Amino acid sequence: MMQDDRHSMIRVDQAGEYGAARIYAGQLAVLGNRHSAARSIRHMAAQEQRHLDRFNAMAAERGVRPTLLQPFWHVAGFALGAVTAAIGPEAAMACTAAIETEIDQHYGEQLEALGSDDTELSEVIAEFRAEEVEHKAVAYDQLLAIDDSYALRTGVMNVAVVGFYLITFGNTLYFMAQDKSLFKSKEWLTMFDVFFGKYDLARKSVMKFLEYYKPDFHPWDNQNYHLAQPTLAQYEKRAS
Image: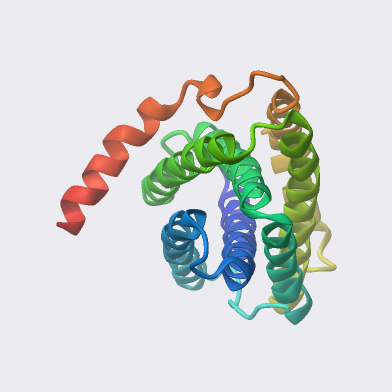
């Protein structure tokens, strides 16, 4: 994979993790400590912040872009989290499960595209993906325990996933403007190739998105918990 393609990946991942961190901040602002779901969200939020910090550092190390953040998207992510939490803890969990499922799929496609071309980036993405896999299943199990309504799951899914992608896209555009690449055709061609061309990440994400409409869907249907277990075990060993 070319360096420009890897830079595009880091740029999108940085924007996505920032969006996720702001969504969790919005949920916690509304839920506080009034529901058991808040404890899970607080744990996930801490991990998302660690992901964002790492991508910020990696972006700076590799000269991808400055890490200034656009105020509008800062507010938009927070608002999405706050709105879903205001509906209730079940909506917050549905939002979390939907977004984490998309991030898991996105990271998996990146790992496949990277192959052995960038060991450092692959290791970072694999570790973070393992935590996202854990997040989506915990959130989904808590959702089912609170309210297993199909209408709730699919309705919140639509709002959460579309909102998350809009926030991620907005953050990406802002980052591109910050490093003066917004009007460079090469940047757009590289992004197009990653999402619609050689790596086809957009179509693959849409196909996984459609799986959410299955009445008996569960995140484990993707059969990838085995990907999370060894990585999480290694992370816990290093942290102890």
